[in-house]
Image (cartoon, rainbow, N blue to C red):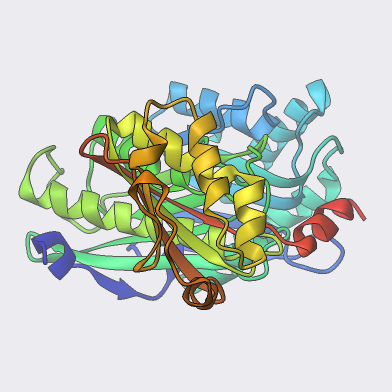
Length: 407
């Protein structure tokens, strides 16, 4: 076990676990009954960084936050609403996003430059700003060290459970904490970031290094999950680091930085897996590894193609050991490989051997596919590179949820 793994301890509190952070989540009337607005607040200015959707159809909050982070490396608060994406709403949508920033700054008596905003929900509808404003003042008044779970619940849309996680590591003999919440269930595909995630830490880390680290860990976590292959208009992952743990600034390549990096990656991966496990209509969680690829890019491309294949995902839902769909998906991925050299395993059971050897037990394969969590390993025998993605099955329930999303 690595030093980083040995020093990592799971703790409670989510985004409120690190020192100097408070949060809240309430119902403001954007949705009919459920909590729909949340605040995450740092008692002191925090180093801030974000990664955002690569879609060209973006919500006002994405454009606004990108501009905020270009102008300033610090922030203190993230205001999030669910139930309305404020996407494809034109000039009025941007005006509403700016008003959200102004109102949040007023409610907390902080500069507007220290406010980030996020939205999730139905596209193409104007924000009910009276509800939003009331929600901002209400969440500001109810900020609490115990409010992480309320915030995690308030950012959900079709999610069936709130997603939060926190860990503690030791740096310089002092506890340093990382906490996060995330939302995502549908419209999930690995193309940064295909969901919303908000992470806090009391580590002391320079902005340039924080931004670089965020990009790195996103690449092996949120960029490696898929539920349905769709990328949202509002995807983002934001991180605030306020340095309240009292340690020296982290330096890249130092031992303490390696511990921090490993812990942050762990938090991101856990939140990523929770999103997939809560995939709309999902009944199975699937981990797919492609190894023996000629390059890392080839491994990632093949893995992504398999995980986003509707035919593969429906076969998994039907508990059908249809290895042909997996091989066909890799074939259309565009990477160079020899199908006759490829091997596929479900768990420890070899389903496809070299030269198209399919001498496996259908009964044993069925038992593996009946499990709630399934591991699929694909060996291309074309090199030394590997990649792992996480996906779920595609069920009738997914169609039902999304056919009636606006109702």
